[in-house]
Amino acid sequence: MSENCNQNCNTCSDECADRKEQTDFTAKPHELSNIKKVIGIVSGKGGVGKSLVTSMLAVTMNRRGYKAAILDADITGPSIPKAFGITQKPDASELGLFPPKSKTGIQLISINLLLENETDPVIWRGPILSGVIKQFWSEVIWGDVDFMFIDMPPGTGDVPLTVFQSIKLDGIIIVASPQELVSMIVSKAVKMAKSMNIPILGLVENMSYFKCPECDKVYKIFGESTIEKIAEQHQLKVLVKLPIDPKIAAACDKGMIEFYDGNWLDGAADILENLEENKDNTILEDKKRRNTNMKIAVAIEGKEVAKHFGHCEGFVIFETENQQIMNSETIPNPGHRPGFLPNFLNDMGVKVIISGGIGGGAIEIFNEKAIEVITGASGDAQAAVEQYLQGNLKSTESVCHEHQHHDECDGH
Ligand SMILES: Nc1ncnc2c1ncn2[C@@H]1O[C@H](COP(=O)(O)OP(=O)(O)OP(=O)(O)O)[C@@H](O)[C@H]1O
Image: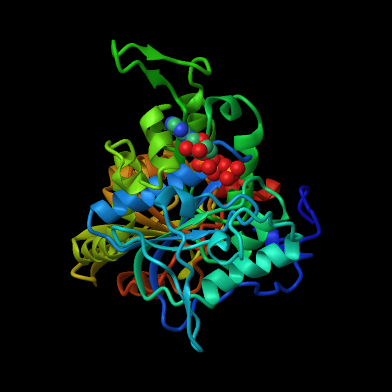
C-alpha cells in the first residue's frame, strides 16, 4: 500500500498491490459536440481572479481565430455571464441545450443562465453541484469547439475533484494572487492535479502589480512576487503576470470583457496553440526520428532483453536506417563504475536504449544527453528493436526503485 494511501484508488496514480478496480466516472460529451482541447482554470481559493482569467483566455483564443467556449463550473459563484453581458437563456430542444453566444461568438453555459433570477443563491450540496457540471458537459450541444475553458470550482474539495474525474482535461492553468503564492494553497492545487495525472500547463499570477497610468511607475501592492520561486519548486512555467487594472474591472462590470485592450494572456495562448499543434508534431517527430540512421543499444541476457540494465550480460548495438536493421554487434558489459555506462554508450553514438528495468540515475544522464530510454521491454532483443522501429514499442517509463536492484539497474 502506498504511504500516502487515502483509500480512494480513483484519486491515486500509484500502482500498488492493493489497488482496487477503478470506477469510471468519466462523463461523455454530447454526441453532437466535437471538443478538441479542454483546459481547466483552477485556483486554491475563491476571489483570486480565476473567472476573469478564464474569460480573458477564451477571448484571446477567439481573437486568434479559434472557436472558444466556456463551461462555468463555478456553480456557487458564477460570474462569467456578467463579464460577457450575457443574460439570454440557453435554447432547449429534445436533443439538449444550445449554449448562448457572446457578441464575438464565444459559447457559454453557466448556472446563472438557468436560474429564474440571476441573483438567487445556489445552495445545493456537493453531489448536486457535480451533477449539474456533468450535465453542462453531456447535455449541452457545444458543436465544434477548438478550446473549451472550464472555470473550475475554487479549492481542492469534493466538487473540483469530481470535475477532475468526470471531464477529461488536456491540462490545467493555476491562477493565484501574490498572497496565495506565499502560502500552501498553490502547492495543494499542484498536488491534486499531479495525483490525478493532469498536466499543469503553468501558473498565472493575477494582481501581480499596479502600473500608474500617470507616471508608468510600477507598484507591487501585495509585495514582491514569489511566483518564479514557486514555479521552480514545482517545475512549472509562469505563463502570465496580470496587473491590477481598473479598466479590466470596469470591462467586467459593464459586461464588455471581450473588448479589453491588452495582450497579457499571450504567453498562455502560445502554450495552448502549441498544445493544439503538438499532438501531430509529436507523431511526426517520432516518425522522423525512427527514419533516420541511428544506433540502438539493447541490454541483453543471452538473446533476450535484460531485466536489469547495469548488471546485464552485454549490449547488442543495432545500426538502423529507414526503419530497417542494417547491422548488429554484440559487446560485453564493460562493467559499471559511477557514470560509466551512459557515457560509454553515448560515446558509441547510441541514440536509443532498450531495457527491462533501469534506474532513475541512469535515465537522468541519458535524458541529459538526449538519448531516448525505453523501459519495460522483454523477450527477444532483435524483435524489440523491430517493434520500436515500427513505432510499436512504448516505454512503460518504469524506473527500478527496488533497493536490491538499485545498483544493478543504474549502471552509473
Ligand atoms: N487584475 C485585475 N484587475 C482588476 N480587477 C480584477 C483583476 N482580477 C480580478 N479583478 C476583479 O475581481 C473580481 C473577482 O474576480 P473573479 O470573479 O475573476 O475571481 P474568482 O477567482 O473567479 O472568484 P470566485 O472563485 O469567488 O468566483 C472581479 O470583479 C474582477 O473584475
